[in-house]
Image 1 (cartoon, one colour):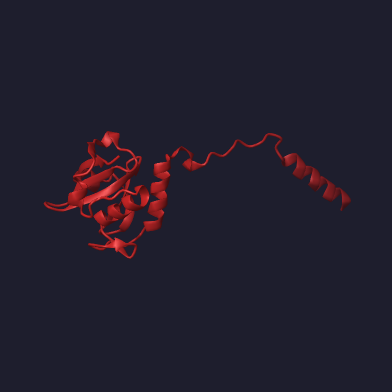
Image 2: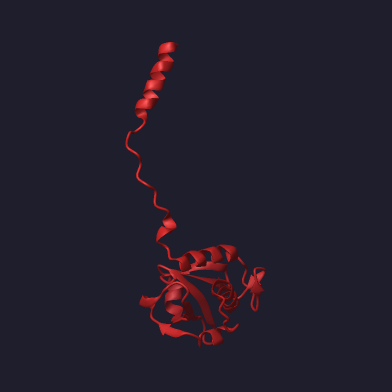
Length: 153
């Protein structure tokens, strides 16, 4: 028994590597402070149901989500409706998007939709079918509906 325990201890000690493992890089380390802020905000609102005219986590529409988000994230007052939000800022092109830019879509002959660009082709918005969610600009639907983007600051 004594030899069995001694052998087990020697085996376990020899299994340990003398080389220290490479440091693990946090996944979020390369994200800008604005991107991190946007993801934290999204996590607070994620799944909030869509409600036309809504302004709270009980229910919110797309422009209401943008209105509340800019007020909370950037202490910046925006018009409540998409029609007013589109008139703010300066136009930027898809290849120039950066975190916090507003993205506008034409979803019908008179319907407009708005979201906030996060990074890598992703934006957060209040979807009428999924509530507050993150979508990709590469999605066929959003690609065909894309209208323009604005940078507010």
